[in-house]
Image (tube, rainbow, N blue to C red; front, side, top):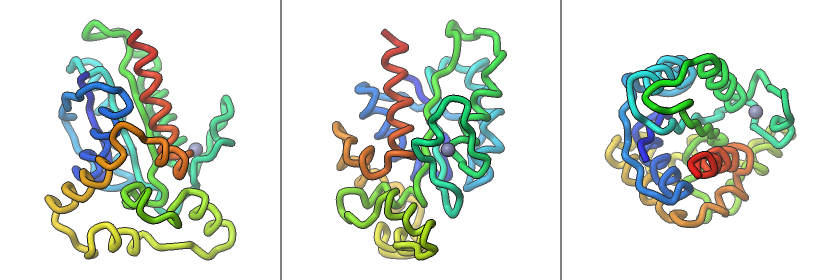
Length: 214
Ligand SMILES: [Zn+2]
């Protein structure tokens, strides 16, 4: 399957590729988008251009996009209600951009529409990398911290736990992202359980691609 990946860094994209291959259950050939994003809000800013480019100019089957929540609102089950949109939730925002951009596009490249999958790492992708290694790192723990004003950990701490330094080189980031995500290859249930809003939504989107292909 031909898939484009868009996230805040090439290391995140290496992890997203493993997720896409695992959930889709088939190898993924990566389609390079014409632009790359570095951090937020860059992901949201380049997303419409990338969607149109992939739709009209490539034979990509779909796009996987994810961002870090940082200190914004966590995507929860409440946001999944029909017609609901939380203006401070990045996942809701990315979904709205996808919907708006693809809404009236004519079919192209022999397909009706591009598949999309949207994820949100809470509070940062390093939390996903620690899943199964550190039981204290979960969406629920982070949500609790937002409610009480006492965060259970900082993004710096998560980074340090994953890389052993605050300033990893890009190749080392890619290596760590790949190693940690590969632990879940074949079974992402723990990630879906510990990160239901941001990772669960991403996996659910990817599963719909399989249905669409049948
Ligand atoms: Zn949301």
